[in-house]
Length: 474
Image: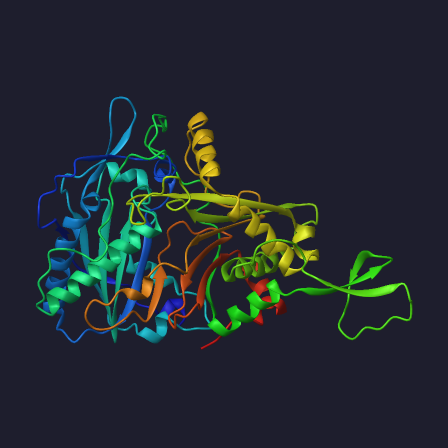
């Protein structure tokens, strides 16, 4: 649908939703994983659904009631940020409430939102509140907002949440709980507990005595918010993911001369030189490369080729990793807050494009495997020496940042009328090279990549044969 023909999303109502029970949680200090996010936009993620079998004047009160009850289990989301006289930043769980917006755009339809071969439409950004709001602003307004947008044959439920308060694990635990309680209330089922109770402890190495000094008015985003970009969802079926993983993990037949490996045999090639002998060996002793690392390597190579970088240019592939299970002792799997660190992998553009997929995947695998308790603690120590906000972006034109995860339970959000049809994000934290990984709707290991690139780079990967052979069109 041409952007000029898309009507604007109209706000019907705006209100504040409060927890249905008063919080006794008190103040939660921001950690060394939370504080760097103060310069990032609010997280904006949401789900598209078929139209519920409820009239809208019943649906909106139901969602508000469900949200109110959910906030009682997640008091920080209804709180505010504050900085004390010593410079420490806290979440005060003061039951200040969250914003709730009801919007409508009846001329839009599900097919317009999820057209599989098109870029993500610009109007999707209008399904979210707090566009481009920086997380530091949680000192002066709500930490979260929910927007429910009616379209012609469905609804979109979008959540905008302060990134200094939650990471993806915490965000989707909230969203899943919101759906769980709505489903139970809609079915007149009683509840006193939720399936996945968040853990609000603040007793790990992530909670530090270091102080982050911020400029007057608060930190700003570290990337150009107005650069021209394209955004597209690339889907990878279970079948194509398995094929890719098998290719990356395959052993190779190598040719040896006098016992020295110096070439990789092309199957079927013959040699009359009696000094040649066949040797079958794995490429390296690296542990099995995961599906996601294989997919990341595929994208790293394609984007590097598309950018046409000088061979000597250093490229960076950053991956956000969950530190909950990497620390010793481990954090609770449902620890609430940010417990992520950004792992960079470096390689020259020439190495990325001249080596095979296995080589690139190994580099990523080595970075992830090395990120253990000792590495997490070293990250903390280094940050304490120089407390600063996270420099999100692509300042050198040769970087990529992988966020979110195909392991997040995004499609487990059944509010009472079925699973989501799609997951989409807003305009937050979008820059050239920002990639977000979602599970595919079909499940079973399928993956969707939300890829944001400069227009010329996007055109490049769309014509990249190695990359596109694994992309699935539905």
